[in-house]
Image 1 (cartoon, rainbow, N blue to C red):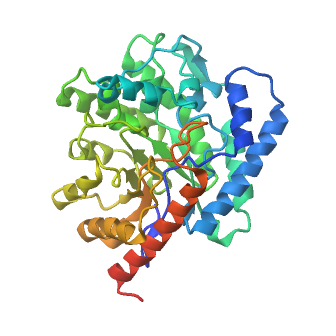
Image 2 (cartoon, rainbow, N blue to C red):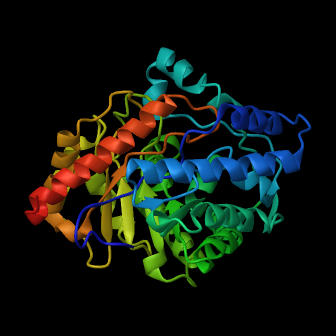
Image 3 (tube, helix red, strand yellow):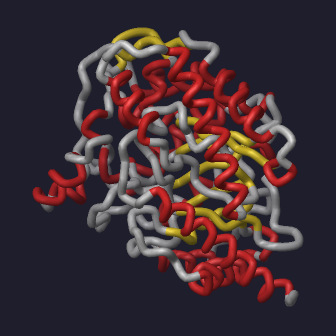
Length: 384
């Protein structure tokens, strides 16, 4: 993981706004409407090139493909792995379930309600060996010759988040299920890092999982289950150097009360057990912005860089650069400036059709983050 050795670097969580015509094409694909696969592939390639250029223009240091090819950060695996042909088993979000009107609003999102999460009803194996390779090639093509895009990452679903959304109706127990997922996902993780890119493992299961799947467990029971998730993930990452791995810890990218979220202090030590060199986490939204104080008494391992969210992902407010700088500095003062890279709470296109933040405002937020990082660097390094 890159460190902020001379100034505060910037990155983001992964998903970015997709063009309207690409959204329509991907909606059609999800709904089983015949589409021209070559035309879709070309549109994705163009969209990746465009989104990389926008990131560079906004001042993002560590860029990605915006997840242009994926219907969502986790559900894309149903198109790449076998074994997922069962009936979907809906999840209960404990926090929004207490507020029925809010629940309808969250799950009525035009993108979310199209999201397909078929249960596992057969052996899991990779059936599309080209998809991850094509993602890599698209990002390589978009960054070729771009001096300001020499540092790249690509997101991939963790075994734990896959087990969260896709119920197990085939394997005799959960442990065999999650390790089967890990064995299958290893190929994608290695395809990304073999190309010299960082892989970002999306791990909402280690936080959001507490209130949407494991709410019936006490905290001790949840932590034990989360540690099994980490064991499976590290199994899948065994062949990859730590410095090419980062992870995203989150409580769910949806507008809801989030009053059932497990505190960061109760899960951060488990996140530290992941074979990773960077941890992105929520630090800007109203439910988690106060938690930077955990680093007053929790030591961050030497090998791990923090990527705190300094931008919120559900609000169309453009954060003031001074606020961004404050958010960066208060963590840097606790863990060391070189161990902080500015990021976002979540992505801005977590699933196709998500429209919480207007696309042009997303880019304005990114520009504000870059300016805030510059201001923080002035303060932390004493440079004008």
